[in-house]
Length: 160
Image (cartoon, rainbow, N blue to C red):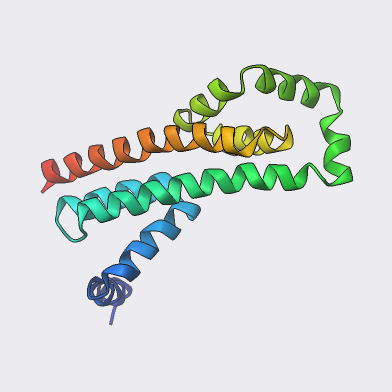
């Protein structure tokens, strides 16, 4: 049996267990977020997964991953080596900039490639209040994930 055949068999087996599919979608956002959203949108366009459930799993995965980055930054702020690095001139300047416009920075980071990791980690390093950061992160995730998911579904429908 070929690799493609084995993968198809695995996916077909998962299709019989919708909760496992949704869990896989949720977890996939932690590995390759945008790829998981696009792939799930394509699957939903062919009705291989329930679009509503898949969209919710994606959105929750995106928000959970972003909050995890923020919390990782908060934890890292307690490490002496990290605190020393944050006092360096260039790092301190970047952190100061984010601190002044923290909520705008969190929103922009969601939509601009390559900014999420450093900005969400920095929000934790700055010890921004987690409830406030979580609110902005959730709003951005609630906009981004469904938008990309629906665009992928529409693209999958056109390609079908």
